[in-house]
Image (cartoon, rainbow, N blue to C red; front, side):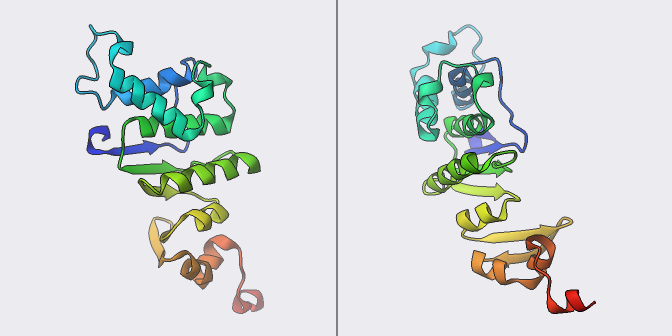
Length: 179
């Protein structure tokens, strides 16, 4: 997947907690190396891998935390690290599964800003239940219920769609209230 230019994050944070922030990112960058599993070579001898890891950490705002254990990061910063790990592989497409899961308001705002910035240079496929965030970020939406497409379109059209309102936005129609 990495060599195809695709990176993904998971709904549950998927990092090595005991490794440093930089080591997590370096391992992800190594996935794009010509010989990612060259066991006889010092992992810190590949300048291109190290550079990609540093650039990815800078892109998500974690360069200053690179020497710390991932465990020391807040939940939001761990999610940022996971996105840095995605970026370290040099993807064209980012698949982000619930990147705001478990975040407080301040962390969510920061993550939304990061995803919006990344969307300027990457294709982003976002699976997210925070509808306010989705409407801020998306140019096109597909809404699914029970594995079936309910509606597809621009955010304004989706927000106005009565079926979507009933299913996800909590708006009740006049006939729902009467019946």
